[in-house]
Length: 167
Image: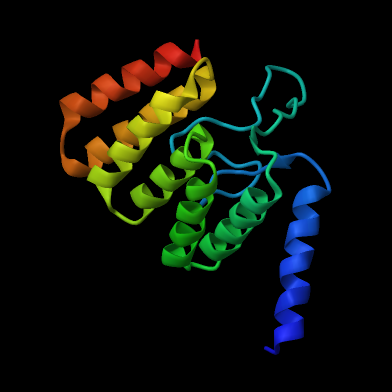
């Protein structure tokens, strides 16, 4: 690819980020699916149609939005290392963004890096504040990582904590 083409793509990504509020599904999940962690993004009501659940606002910073978009594209293409690098760059811009820590935790879980996934999810929890839904998702990442590590008691405790935040 020539330099002008790369500049055009970069500018397009930045402009796309400026076009609206940044909302993204977690890295490694498909839109309108059940993300890793088991929380459906669209609840089903008995006898009625599902109401769409608004996706969380991850960032208002166009550079972070572009990096998130790149991470999602790379993850969907199976390029998890590149996705991780994009998320790490986004975290250098917004180090207190709990959603970015959560995204990286989910990615590390998908990569089989269970101890790191737990540490990153705990970091997300530390910045999540009153975002109960995010805290629940983080505890589910921790629970899933502990299951993979063979720590069933720790996993059960994590899933209980997730359930408390889902109430």
